[in-house]
Length: 295
Length: 334
Image (cartoon, rainbow over all chains, first blue to last red; front, side, top):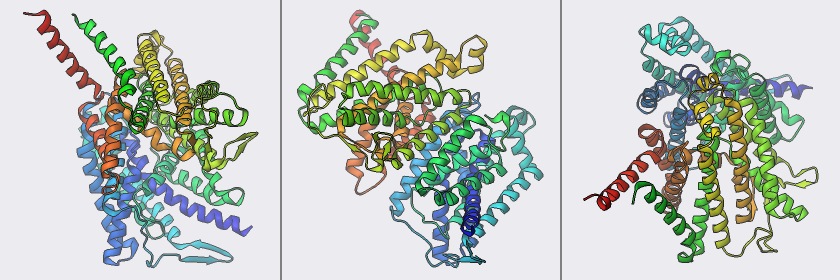
């Protein structure tokens, strides 16, 4: 019986990290109404940043957050401002311009393959970081320490983003824009600047997720694709646009992935995840915590 | 000569060149590349029926390619049924799958439809990869299926040379282009167009947008599955990673988008322009600069969406029309 509990706990921990990787996706969708196909690639960029920061300076992996999160915010802000914004301006009257999805896919191709070009296809990992392979022993159960740290970071980040959206002026402006672009513009909110900031925050959360992943996960150019597809599933499960939903969706996936192999071949859990995704999409497309008007 | 006649002459000339090419090009390698070029043009044109005219973004068409390829191959290998019949059976199965995905998702907004099609295609790939047998049918999991080239001949859809494949895919391409033309001039085409641009307004005018999209999806998935059978017979080897991959789904959609969605010539132009760029940069940069062709692809994608969101067919059509106007002016004018 112990191993089921152990798997469930480890599933929850890994799942909340999944949720953290998808949080930016849901924030960006909530405000821009666009699925950012380049989100996994932004996560990958964050992972390379964190990897090199830790490798070159030898600092504690979690200390890299101070560097990676702001850098990723700037990266996302600039990307949205120079590459995506012009499309939005060109297609002003469309609520969910599909052209933006296409452009983010172009960004995905460029980022992934530029990384391949610069750093090569090899897998890199922080082998001698203080968190690597650390286990917490509770009774007969073993809990992964880097995943525990990741889970705590995910919860803190979710609370921080929630606080920012609820309590600050910028957060209120972002929420107003996400509810009604025209009305927000009429109130003097610069819609496109809000998009930049929202995209920056989304990228910054991807950066934080990257820092939590690097201590125990390999870094390679296409690592983002794994989290991309998973991220789509997570945000639809939780409800596109909902921050708490992203965490919940991530935890559901994490539990399926870690408990599932007790009952079936590990590769089958993937099929179950896709099946669950389609069922939710068909039965309750607004997801577990999403708002109805968003689909 | 007036404007319309020149268009007709140009069309006949293109067809003559296309059908005559194998008489000039004898190299099997070049014919192979041309066959794949037409294969992609066929896929993007089929995709365009739903992705272009219906104004949604399906990103899982590789699943239909896979259904077509696996159905005809299994029927041929296990029961000796001709792939020509298998092609139609695969088409019907893909149509059923297409309708099953379309029914619940067409009511949703664009992003959800795109994600649902991705999830469907990926889920289908995972299942194929994990199954050796469905009932009596041997799927062979990740190892894929191989067709032994024993009984060569038209009835078995297997040939020793590339020419027959060239003509088959060319005829398929011409047929699907004609079908697209007919649909774009039909009531269904107008419904799709209206539903894609302004669904609310179209519905207010009594157009059943969801039904029109569903018909487009059914046709598109049927035609795409036929291409799957063609691919299986052309390469005689299929496996899930190559034929049901997300990469293929994305490539179909984005080539069509760069060419120009919702137009007849756009998807073909996209394939004719982009496939060679990809092939050549892979050949020349493949070793020294890995991934270069995808960087170029991504850049083209972003630039086209910035400057020509309706695709490359728009400026090219303008260029063509100007050219024709000049020619007619010179011959009929002073």
